[in-house]
Image 1 (cartoon, one colour):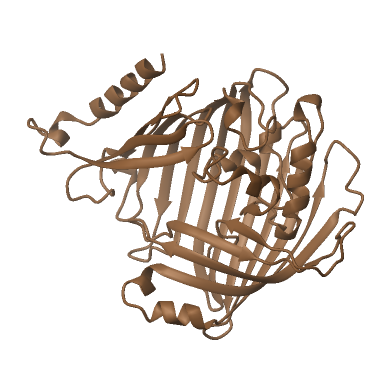
Image 2 (tube, helix red, strand yellow; image 1 turned 120 degrees about the horizontal axis):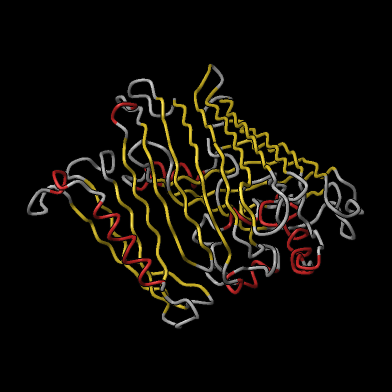
Length: 414
């Protein structure tokens, strides 16, 4: 059944490319293959191939853009075959130079999760300034967790079919002090096997204030609000992104890609959400103990807000990297002092005995490998080493203590 669905989707994707675009001999459309290798504790080594399709010479900025991946789990699990498919078609009548409108179809069955989505996307960009833009996306999506074996923590994602509709708006620009970014997103359940409908809203503001090279202050405000019947995967963790967001990253999509012991010991922090990084170990400890199938909320909340600050300062290693040809254009080692503060509300249990308002602080470093996409937006890997040496609510520990975590993804991307 899985193979039949996959063959059908590939046929639809290739067939969606007009004959005049492909050309009678196929020379007007190109498929660029690349091998792919991954690992998790269910599939084992996952062997696959990625195909990128485009009209020659458009560099992923033209019509009929295809991104397709097919993988086979070498440990032969219950569902060994998986895929991801994305097909993007611009809408010429609504597009202008650097301000494309498009429809995108995405479908994936991998790591125990069905996700199928169609979206309308529109970008507004003045001239050649790729760092000043507005982007709107309106989407519909259906999803279902069909195999819980892939989850790093069992039962924090329910197994019902769910239909969602929503929209997101992102804007970026700059003023005299430095660049800024605003993002807002709304999701509403339109069909569920169980439970009542729910809505979920998130908002985020980022600002970088240049204090004189190489000093800068990075600030971030975050707020998240969800309805009473929101399922566990769309609730909020205090220290990192929501469980549903883990499926958006290859490193956290399935258990074992990152050693599971690192996660269960609270040594790994997935950037996003309120991002109170010093409380990662506490959230992970509650995830390890919670039984969401029995209604226990664990560390998941329906309402959160936070402030994240990072004061960037120079370090000699970053200067050495910048002076290295080629590598200096791709790598950056940022050093900073951070402060996080936030509050969480609306958990179906008493508030944490240490109190609701939490804060942490300490030094940190972020190594980023950045290869910008065709729009000039950052794309790459960002790994942080943060030391939350101070906690406002340390529980049974001392407020000042050596603590360290590895963070995945940037807290503040500016």
